[in-house]
Length: 345
Image 1 (cartoon, rainbow, N blue to C red):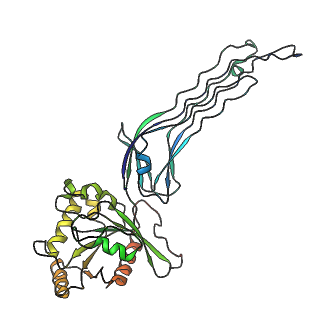
Image 2 (image 1 turned 30 degrees about the horizontal axis):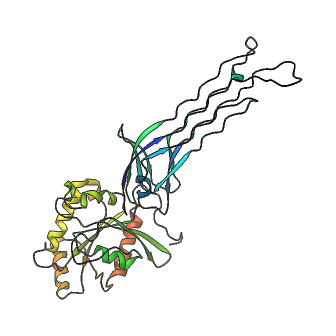
Image 3 (image 1 turned 45 degrees about the vertical axis):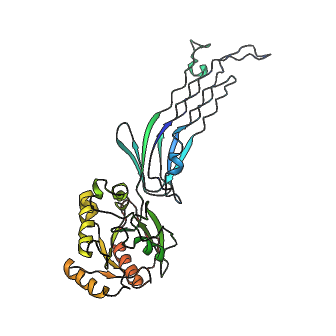
């Protein structure tokens, strides 16, 4: 199950109280204060972890409370520190303070982490108050409270390529042909109801991450269909690959209408998103009449259009090489050296 938003409450542990204690030992003529300090409360961290692509494990647990520090004891024994919590999230997770509406951290690399709630400091024992004029202090500090926060987590998938297009344009079929991803494929709209990621292997030890998003329709930027929910996932992609059904059925938009509909939705959602490098791909070139249709599309758009057939695999090598070239020129947003390749390529 794909989950890309979560609200959680975090509470760090309290510090342990300092101890008031005095030495009482046989054969020791003079005792003295020996109260130990309290232990620190556990802190709560959020860490980006590779291998995760959903916030499902996070959203299933609303409250994340760290352990309190233990109080100090006699004989100058310090209390044990409270155990902290590390919440593991996918790379690409944004951490917000929900009440203040402030972005605390954008976790764009594996291993990055942020302290979202610091544990309280342990209180000082009475040994800390010993002075030449106060050799038997009966004073100790209480432990400090831990921080509490209501957080909102938002996941934006990080990929080199984002596949966009109207429903049934062939995005899922293309992803399944180019990677080991197995999205749902059927001949009705919205078979893809959540983003799918796939690793695309090219010759020369080159690798790209491809994201297939649910089909967009007119009005997606306002919440129509599924597009508004998932459009943010292509904000981090380096290149948009726009898949167009070059041989639509009766009652379906023409290829040029399909292109303009999607472009308008991207523009309305974000001008930055619409400005990303784009490769237009005409799918279903295995059908009769597709050659004339793609020539007409090139003329109407005034740009290069790559013809492919995701079903039979036609034109996929050319497509990948062009995508690779664009990705090399355009690093994925927020990530340094996102393309995993051999250094001599």
